[in-house]
Length: 435
Length: 177
Image 1: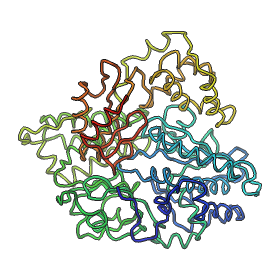
Image 2 (image 1 turned 180 degrees about the horizontal axis):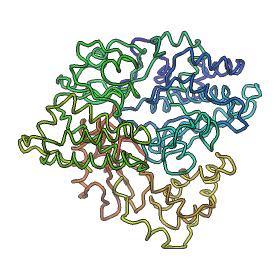
Image 3 (image 1 turned 90 degrees about the vertical axis):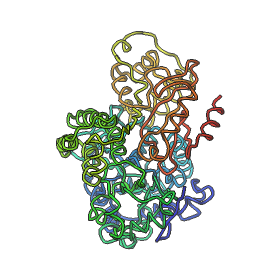
Image 4 (image 1 turned 90 degrees about the horizontal axis):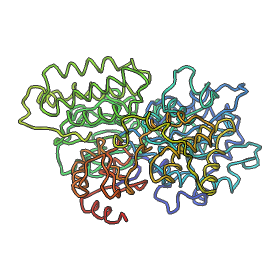
């Protein structure tokens, strides 16, 4: 697997290939925690302004502007404030945060401490998916190193600012990547999302002001403080600042984690050259560019279309950036089958809280199961679209939308893959389910 | 993890008043987790503590272990079950000493997961969701574990095994002692 930067100096990936890059010593020898020292001498408002200037958008999938999110935290609240890192990376196709935590955990910790100082928080939690147990061990060691060196605890770097950060584990629930569900889980409850507003910035963990950001969002913060928000933004585009990590998987010769400047041109070059081209030199058929929750694209939307890799470019091309978890599929793939696979995922991960998502995903899987044993009916495509229409925008949290979009786009972009199954013309093919 | 879901929880919840005992070292470990959260928020430690109990009780959550946690955190037994039954990593039934969890989600699926699953299951003589008669192996199909770039993959216990081939799987199974 490849891990490297293309078209920019490695920033997020600066230390991933360094020997002992995960240790405090190597981190500090290579400039680590200098940004924290600098930030501790700045006014919180000035830090928020730098983050706003950077045009950093949340790297967890929703892409909300980070500086704006931070500015929602009330300054005069008498309650304790909390900083939470969303390290619940569970989006199918996304695996970038894993390597940041494994090989450069101090970047994330430094970003969290800067955020805590900015927002007046003394406590932070790193919510990591339970399956990433080995990463929790790595982060616990990194946090212990910080406490020993006076980077966490009382009076950090002699500034008078106190803060500590702790690891917390999830236990296998995709929904806990949704920030309010994550907070329910962090309080020891089932991972059900909560009504917004109030937003977590006002009432989050323990009904106190809380900021939840993705791992890659936090690792961006020390870079922004070091080089200044505008310089960081200029690495990317006006609206999509900085660089971005992409997780590439599926039918490419060199899958991996790639750091690209925002606005990288273009998607075809990235897949066909940077990632080594298609496995076994097969033809490109489909790409899901931003993790399973975004619209699937067909080859015609990519090849020769100069799709730029940033928030705006992918929307213009008919999909979304999401988490940057790009799944590439060649001509051997049946999109009916891959869509069934993702629908099974959403059914399994639906938290059950609201009816459209809980029942809708279950009905969709039942229809897919019928289709996959050769009993599809011509009207099934429309039936699935109707169900999607009753989930999209009607579920309590975005998981419902995420379940509907892959199906809607798959039927739209790959009608032949469905038609074959719905007309009884499957030549006796059967897709066997694992469920 | 469909494998570990019993048909009814109610017959399990009040079935025994027995309370598990844990060594002082394990209780210290639990205290370490509780100390991470504000004093009146000890329920936050519930998921980390359920992992400790699961590990100490042979890989699954039994009633005596849950009863202990209810007492330890001053919660109702039903509060604990309410949380525990939500998360797929908590086993509500005994599992094999080696819990094989094969990722079945998209990237793994198109990169060869079906062959890996078929090989493991036929070698162990069980279907996904089942445990071998000797109690050594359980095979579960799980959703994306964040190893899409090194697909197909599986987790055995907490260990990641990536870029799987049939040969590699044979080696991993024979190393499970």
